Length: 381
Image (tube, rainbow, N blue to C red):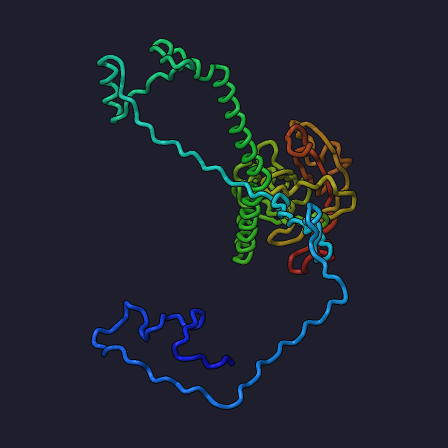
């Protein structure tokens, strides 16, 4: 603490205001009374406290270091040696793949159609062209517009030549021909068989219905079915009709009996004779397609309204002329038969898919069984 000073003693360090009792002249009130002497404070009696003594500084055991004058002072430092701070390395953005920025697509701006140029006739033609202006000649590479003659020559040069047009027409014709041939082959090899099987099936049902009704006509009309042929080895069951008409009999998938003019042959029920028939080997049902596979001893059964006639294959003529009708005689020429009997002759075209020659297969009757006794062994086995 500090000692008490007399009232009128002025200390410029501790008293900010000058003596006189008033402070700043800027904040002095006007209604204050005249300055009066302030009461004088009596001095405090009693012992006065002694001022505290400051502690004595401790002597330094080592000399205190300082900066020496001169350039060496900049090299002195109180801190230990500092390691250099490595500058931060900027990240390598090139390591990341760059994403290509698509270029904007240039949209062609609509260009106005230039007005028709030329004479009055050309402008009239342009006006009649449904509001469209006549095409203007394309400019040359150097910017010069073509004349009418040059434009006509350029248009002719752009047209296809006669050779190009001819080759194009020829190519289209070949393509059309190929398609037509493909359709024809499909029709011949597939569709004709489908239709023939349907018609042959209908004919077989009609024959069975006539037998059930008890109809026994004395003669059969051309194209009328009268019997059913079974070839067990070839899994063939086909109706037999009167005559060998291609349109009425053979193309309908049926087997035709030779019964016309000089080619008239016997019926299965006759006491002697040659029962000769024909059928397609390919297309239109192709019932005789595989008769070349028949061997001696194989059975063929002809079913009629009254009986089952069983024939046994005996011989074959692989190829002969279509004009050779001697194979149809009561004693067929080339069959090996030498005396009258009850024979069977199968005829068809050969080679396959052609009608150049005829394939002949012969057989002889070995069984005549009434229907009342049931089916023959050849159909039961």
